[in-house]
Length: 155
Image (cartoon, rainbow, N blue to C red; front, side, top):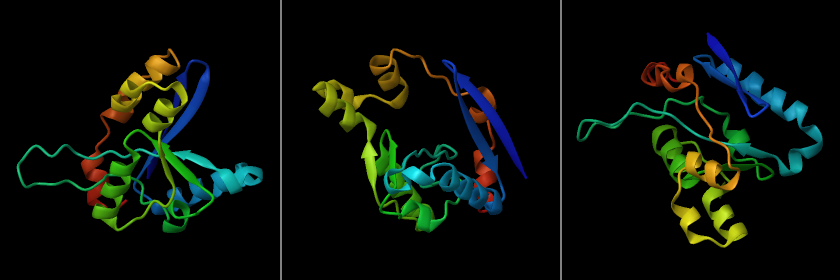
């Protein structure tokens, strides 16, 4: 089972897939690799994760993410980008033993490019607003998805 969400932001379309089925993830990875075949030696992939909030002391909820194929995350030709990407990689490692080989934190990239240390403390939404002058929004149907249920079935 899966649901596909089309998100349009500033004329660009992004597709988000929420799934319980690992075969859907495998198909997505295969589709990406096929579509970007000429660029696979330098593929850049945005990576983010979701999980139920840890509201009780001592209760830690695992990542409710697609269980990405290990070979995809550890491919030395692929770079995964995000805000706080090292924390994302740590949580994936802690929860599922998955490793992310190459990462670039978008905040540090912005600090280096614009020589502005304050960019290193921003979240993704604020960074996009300041650098791109866009106001990104995550659709409610994705924000309110049942992330805990996805984790419980071992996605």
